[in-house]
Image 1 (cartoon, rainbow, N blue to C red):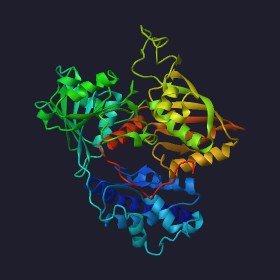
Image 2 (tube, rainbow, N blue to C red):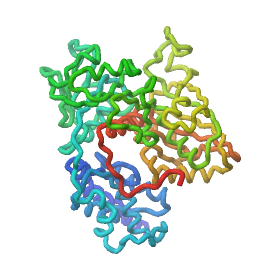
Image 3 (cartoon, rainbow, N blue to C red):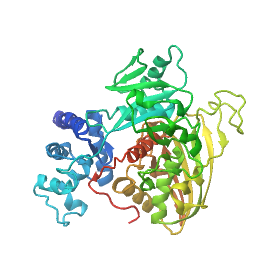
Image 4 (tube, one colour):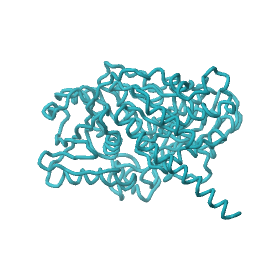
Length: 494
């Protein structure tokens, strides 16, 4: 009996592995040739391993209380691969679950054809089925190549393909001394926090370029944004992503637009003055084709604003305080030394350091409904990455822990904020488990505290990679690359 059980267990695993392995080449071809991205309950399968595919399917039971088998999602993917589609994001997990388990989730009477899979998919994908791909490729230049710059490079390179719409054409740095190019490539190749680069990186010393997974990336040495002629490298109408933080107002960032070949600028820090601070998922619809200078706000603002928006739309927020427990950053000292800011001169690797954050006030730039309602402070701690925001809120209505958690879980799966908010019910999760998270924030449901109308929520965020993913979403919108998601999502707060 025991041997039979073990054999059944092994056979079940092998079946899942074989289906996952069959999926991988189709997933790759769909994206690289047609810009069709495949996900399972919000988890992208682009560049995933077979084990990643299996793990993504396992999360479905956590959310739905019922497992989704790979042999059920496989026919959906196979059918999708035979359709002529315009660029789109397709959640085969949600489609398969809706098709096979409509009775259990209460959607059986919505009039959809669930007896014929192809007819069902034709209806779900009618917006992009046999539709033309009118999106043009856009050149992207990374001005600065620090922590965020290199992660943006990884995100751009991982989507390299024949039909890739965002092409990393160049990086701009200061320097140019002997050995500089190899060091830049080495920092892209290896990362102490995020691990090795997934692919191959070589350098072209003669032409001053980095070659990565088929991408040819020109390395340009310059001391000022306005002294570069991008057109001499074949770069035109480019989006310049400034991740140096040196220029944060319109005058300074406007220097980029004086360079030939530059069309738009995105700052990866809070912008000053009248510059729009965009938190994707919250106010990205404010991006106009005429906007030439935008800000992607800060990592903390991106982490807390989507959660605050969701809560405000459902319960209403009277006021609150945001405390961030933030990993140390490059502007702190490794050991005690002079620093112009209070306390930041003390060793970042040895101390918790109380400092200020403008994120609470910055929320109002993206979500004006909370203007004047939030205070904020920060504690820098001796970890290199992944931070936490503690939201202490007074709500306009009485609720409880279970209701808030259930609501935020639904938001994370079936709303316009599904790419910004993730959700965990783990009792064992710690900060290093969140390295590489692609969402702007992860709600730790086990830590939620609610008493009448007072709520305290603990929100994790990868302040490097998660933020970089948010930056990329803004870049896509600036390039006019707004692809639909299938199936359609509900509206937060409805």
